[in-house]
Length: 447
Image (tube, rainbow, N blue to C red; front, side):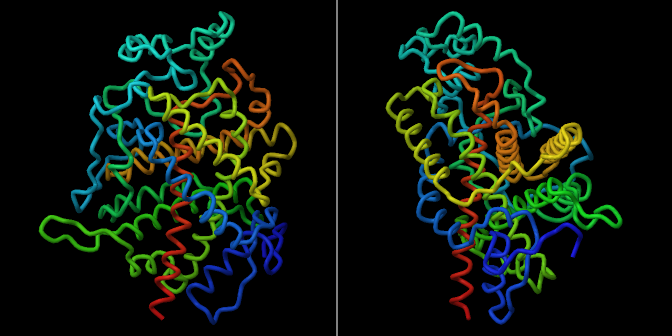
């Protein structure tokens, strides 16, 4: 065992519990193995996570994703790969992403950056005049001049230092709105050298891989966390592909569903030489990280100034009420990951390590532009941005605590893109854990 890494007690810590669950699911005769890692600090058991997700989070997050504010995501799928010439291709037509016609986008969403918090006056002329809204016409007229000036200052503020992702230029002619409900994440046939190169580049060049740790030493907490986050994201994406696999296509009508053989190929302990259970453990770790971020960002959305505006006043109120209800659930979870242990060393060293952490993740978000399948690229970019937003939240606790109630703040802000990515990315993780339970039942039924 590497120096400085503690063993998790039997039955203690999410990592130990996940290892137990996954091992028993595949090989009932295998005895529980000890698991090392940062999840010891959570003191959470897998049954609590599963029950919490199944009965509290999953039904609500699924409903939230169907709301207009969260179903439309603006993305540029034509940005060139900055690292190599793209050579991938999809083997089936489902790789294609169907953009949403402008006429279908709620007018409040089309209005752009200016309305990501504030209601436009309920006025037909303003609702139709999106160009005027882009010029801050969406600012609530009840705001003081000082608040308006603060909002304009914020709009000009370059907060790129806080971003963990390479952001798309939403004003680019190549950026288009996509209806996420009409372009679900599922198996597209994208595989081979191109897909391998993307993930290999992520792990080997950007991920502080434990297999490449310094001679005679062990990776620090932050770097282990980084690796687990990316591994968990990879596992979640693979679970979606296994659960929504093209089973057959007859007379032009495709049939999608769970593929047990594909699931075992990606996660079975024997077929993956022991890596499968570790990947699933990291999925749970990632779930806890993003869950923690949601609980931390709740005060931001609880302010009256924040409005999830689409133009439909009644639906917007219901959407915010549902979101706040989800936040209450996330805050009620008793066994959160403690992010305060990260970057807690000397001030200079912690700052340097955090910046390294941020730049590595930002580079990963750029690699997503190298994915050769449009639908895979769409969901890869969204989930990467969602995770990046979660990290931004976790390392902005002081700024969130200082947010003014009735005016914008330059200290911490979220764009609509970040909000949509954050909740949809967590929704994908919630779905992954649900799908994992479904595969467990399918495997048990086959015995």
